[in-house]
Image (tube, rainbow, N blue to C red):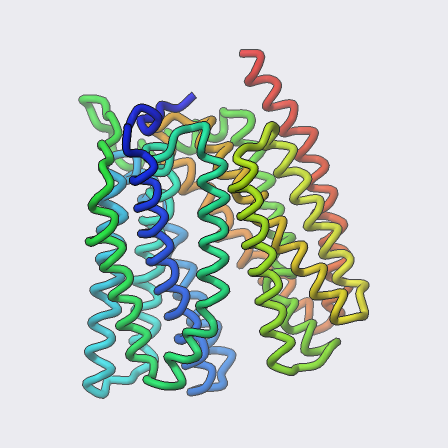
Length: 409
């Protein structure tokens, strides 16, 4: 079991509250700016190529840097890494704000800043996930994750509307200012007040490549982690059509009204908020492997039903239920890793999980995106839904065996 230094710290609740405030403030600013950038590019170019470039620059830089981010999260003070990544994002967006005010409104600058933001996320995300057990006692990790999921959902609920208001009233430059200010506030004013000790290191420190290899070998030889990461990759590959193609399906099958696309986002986010609130109230899962498996199977069944549904009202209900399931999946997966992995290797394990998802979903779109121009999206959802439900049930069997083998050791 990993060490946890939070349970004996008398002010852990204050530290946990500051941590939640810091990360959700940063997320809120990033989300508002992300929506503003997408809409700005859409309105200025109406180009699918530019949208593809924005998405690629926003996602792909995280993939290689996340491996280094995992090593750094296990080598250095995780709080300082998070502060540095937030500070870098703040500096980049504030520079872009100044350039836009000076009249330099070039789309290439948006690509550059999107890349910097992605690099920062690659460093930040493993450090955030690995730092949580240093702040929150082990028996409170599930409740903490539920609260965080609800706050994340609330941020995602508000961000599109605020991003639209900012873009429509004062312009894209002021969205950059908002992102820079929230990132700086999260890093400098809030996070610095949390006491976190560096992870204990051996006297002789290995090279970064050696530490990456150690993290990969630890995950591979840990039966539960190995199964979790493999099934995580397969599942997110199968989830990608529902994640990215359902707006296109709505436009084709129900109508291209803006309110329909907005309702699709809102019911998903509302479901996530309710699910996170329930987890925060419940406080713990007895069997996290079962929760993960049933969540994946539930997603599969719901996506299958989305493929056969012909009523937009029923579609929204199904999408809201799917959103409700998401916090159960992410909370159980995150807390399971936090409970099973020693503190000194946790950052590297989370970086592998992060990289798996970042690779699996774009890989899914490389397959299902072009396919959707020749095959009905409803059929894609039916087939991937069946496969995802089967994947969840298979993980229940294999993950359950791995958990039993660990319990017997």
